[in-house]
Length: 120
Image (cartoon, rainbow, N blue to C red; front, side):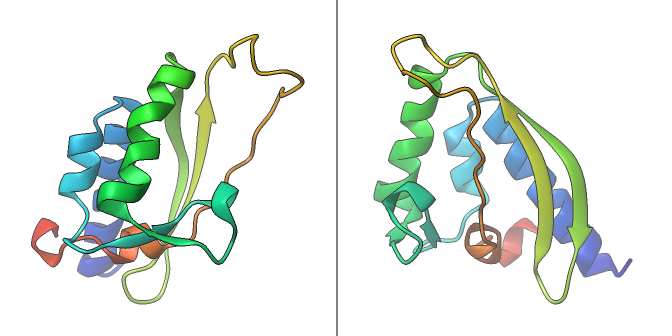
């Protein structure tokens, strides 16, 4: 694996470790200023700023699912600064949310492509 690819895998792991710890500031520290991302519930074509947009969701999620966990299952370096991550996100879904027993989320690499080069 090329050195850059190892660095991107490491950064992706840091990002998801921060997510598991509910450390939104740590997650944001790995994103470039002006970074954009997508959040599927808002629609596949909906692009939001990370700061002042998606970070609001990241901060609210632990309130909705206080004991949620994030575990990286596999990291696959791809071309350029792309890393494919399979992660398991789990936690008890509150009883007030009817009929949901499983939720699958798919991220594209927009967030990881926005990671600051200085973090490498």
